[in-house]
Image (tube, rainbow, N blue to C red):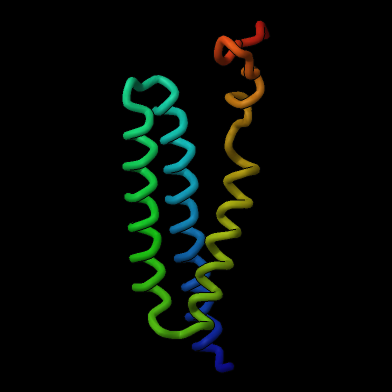
Amino acid sequence: MTPTDAIRLAAVFSAGTGLGAVFFGGLWLTVRWALFSQFSALWIAGSLFARIGLVMAGFYFVAGGQWQRWLACLAGFIAARLLIGRLLPKSGAAPYTASPTGPQRHAS
């Protein structure tokens, strides 16, 4: 592997990280918006198709036909997932519990 190849793989890793940030950040925003929307299923389905389309097009464009680039891009995508999981607040998930009458909010 030449230094140029290593730089290219680092750039592809960075692109994968950016794609992952867009994908998982978009998922987080979609869930937040869907909670308060009358058309939450439409928000979720539309966002899913848009995010998947964007990420797959990005992978195809960045990685091309080389498996090493696909792997580097996927590694960056997973790294973004781990980073976003640590950075985003977790406060929205805890106050709700399931009940037969629907979600119940706990007093905090």
